[in-house]
Image (cartoon, rainbow, N blue to C red; front, side, top):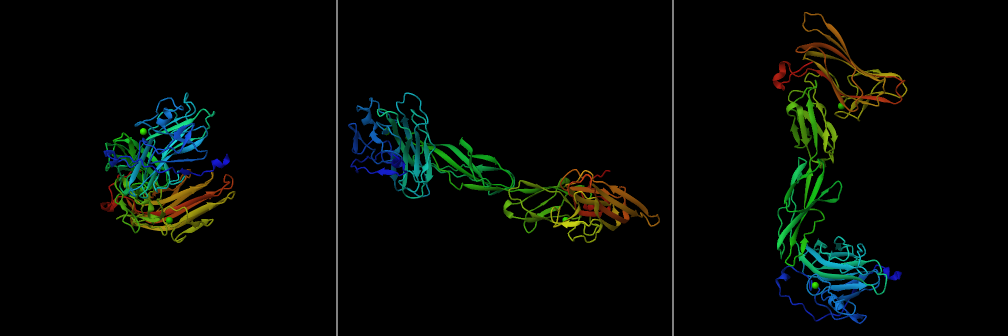
Length: 577
Ligand SMILES: [Ca+2]
Ligand SMILES: [Ca+2]
């Protein structure tokens, strides 16, 4: 018995016939099958209980996975002692019957030649199955499918065969099974198949299949179109170019699928629609593919649809972006700043309130992004920006004052210009706010220490001077403290005595990530001259610090603020304290 289960497909050769089907009707314009209604039959190849066994002419029978079942002209069965005078059929006078009491996987197939490679063809057939007596519902017992081999092979078990969905309903004509392919050779083979995996239970009871009303025809053509790139997430996809195939009664529904290349899975987007375009809502940083198909009604009442193309019809890349604000060193918005990808034409300019959006292709790879401004000084570029599969990279730039008094405030030259206090800080390449490096003030677990840097700078006639820097606390303990000491010695005019003021700032450390701090050294609406001692210092105590604490610093600057005598260069901003 096991020997029968070996998966070998047998195409049973029957004697050639002299019966020829007259081809006179207009249906031949679209119908590519011989004897599609299985109305004519080959001479008998044997008998079952005295009744002739026959296969429809133009078709070949196949079976595998079990003993050979029996093929009959349903008409012959109905009027024999086996039947009850009723001819199960959905078209014409008869259908192809297959039956057995043992399990079977069997059907009929037809090889068709003269097709055009690359053109779409569709195949449909109607099927009815009755398990045992058919007196009660036995859905799930007999599985019906139609298939096409676009390369013309005759093995129904070949992987090349493209099968329709399966219908396992019993006792009703299955009329919605169809498949379609792009021809890969001038020859194509179509299959109508029933899998009947259960024995009938008694030798007198047969599991019956009826096959009828097949159509193989060229399918209409439709192609989805979409923009190659989109700098907004939502864009329009069209499929308004359907061209009917021969025999078209009318074009019917369209279906559209989409695929996110990051996922690689085709998904239904729109099915059964008469729409010919729609807006697709994608995500920035993703590349999408689309493919459309269209249904056509044929003169015999059948519906076929065009095949989907495996690679899709069209592709759209939705550009990701870097977006945020550009600020002056005093934290006020700077419009008119250019943000640009180095070595490319991708640039943007910050607008009202300093907001900018820089869109660029995801496939550019790591890039350097720069900021520049006609009045403020640039900070270092943002290096190694990779926007692959990123929707939006948020980033806030701060510009440096044109009279920046700080040496090496961006820590791009190590510790040059700075003196250390306590534990000598280190220079790190990650994390940085901009450029290649930043400063790290660090304290080890369970150790009490302080780490800081100082620099003394000179300012001259600086309008509302402000200290500006970015800081990023990581693993900060509850009793850690960050202090900024500013000792300002100023002389507003040559006739006044110098005034010394010390400012002590304690920035909050409870929010992770980079934060910007700007602090004005003097009263509003005046320019200052003098010296400023800057001290940035982390205090780390053993008691509450079971972990290593680190405070990263970048982009320290000290210089003039927005407004003042040079405001002709600047956006007009109302300041308040
Ligand atoms: Ca028929
Ligand atoms: Ca830096």
